[in-house]
Image 1 (cartoon, helix red, strand yellow):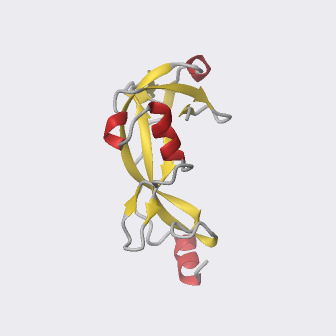
Image 2 (spheres, rainbow, N blue to C red):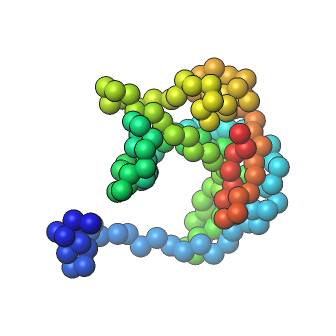
Image 3 (cartoon, rainbow, N blue to C red):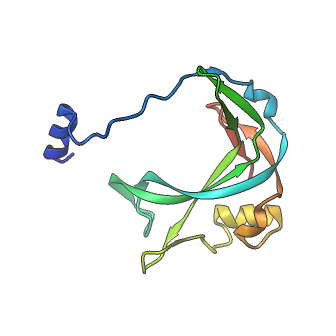
Length: 149
């Protein structure tokens, strides 16, 4: 780690003020959603840290920011925060995006890529066609709701 960054972290410098988020008081039992069929509501492009190069796939010493496609379902239930506000509970799936030589991010066209397998399972050809398609939900080892593909 860069010594300057390490020193800033120890002193708390350069860190933005973080908002206080109400805690969660009521969550449904997600195990009951195992095997549920639910419609895809949409998708978004998100940035996450990765220990692999987006260009070559090689393992890196330090993580880099990469873009991923997050596909989400319609809400299966709603949870309650301590302040009584509600939030949706949805299943999701993450798909890695590919970075071209020109620096643009996009979907892989390789038949063995996860996104192409997902498209084949849904019998669609484009990302726009997945909205409204029904998928099966599973619960992973961390009790997160995931889309089966």
